[in-house]
Length: 188
Length: 188
DNA sequence: GCTGGCATGTAACAAGTTACATGATTTT
DNA sequence: AAAATCATGTAACTTGTTACATGCCAGC
Image: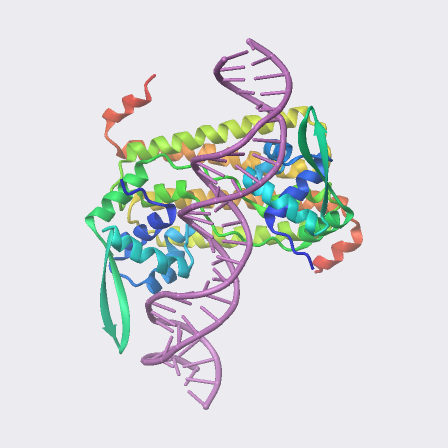
């Protein structure tokens, strides 16, 4: 009956993990868990929570904390059921959407500067490295909740490693064709 | 001045490659090139093309072909310039968005059936295999336009391979914890 | 006294999705 | 004769993004 959108599922998932939380908390903490796969922006969060309450998937309660009004939300049994049902439905295939690769792909025919594209690749490599290190650090702490978090973390690690390798190869290829002068930008 | 959205860039990229084309053609052919990274749905295509014309990035012309009115579009020098400029800007980091991984991640705490999750993983493995084979086939034909297409294809290949490996490991882990009975569903 | 963080939202807009409307032509 | 494909769009709706408005409190 009550089909969830991915955003709603992500919010329910956050509620499931953290217990009673405010929209502000949820937005702030999303990054460390569900946020690796789906993080609604703050305004969407505030729009989603009351709708979950309307449908009985969450309950809210007001709290006055140091003279500030706070709305705290908690998932209901119905919410848990709806989330579980959603998990069991086969995931819909999202259309590919990757502006970064689009830029590389079109670079040749559009006559882009390969040196600039190589810089883009380098930037992405950096991001992948950062993610890899972050995930490794979490792995090291390793107080495991459920095996599932480790499974997706493993996905992230493999992804990061593959991006790094690809980036190295790609950067080399792009710089080979680009004029040598620009190489100095990279500086030692 | 005329900043492009990723959708506009994708459409311009398609025009760049195929020469003069109709909205219908563009939608249909997107899959084989730019579509790996960005494919606007048909309705968006029809909305985007006139706007590109308004801004002088493309020109349209009417053609009557077998009693049917057809709008043909072509990229202009301004369009090429705008696209090239867009390629040179550092790509914006898209927020992660992966419902599939979200489902696996939440599976543990939401009390999902691991056997069902394993099926999801299996499905994704299949998709990755299909992509891998498709890209390998293109590689084999290998009448290379620019090196750039090969670079992004290489990304796709590495990605597919990593997903396959991850899926194998993940499926095994999930089935290990799941009750043996369900294994029969996979049936030989 | 000012900055930054806490806290909740609204408004305006851009982008994407799905379904529908329309009608011709080509293929089976 | 029916089904598929060509061809162009509109309408309604959902998401997501960015910017803004408001005001309190804690620490420097």
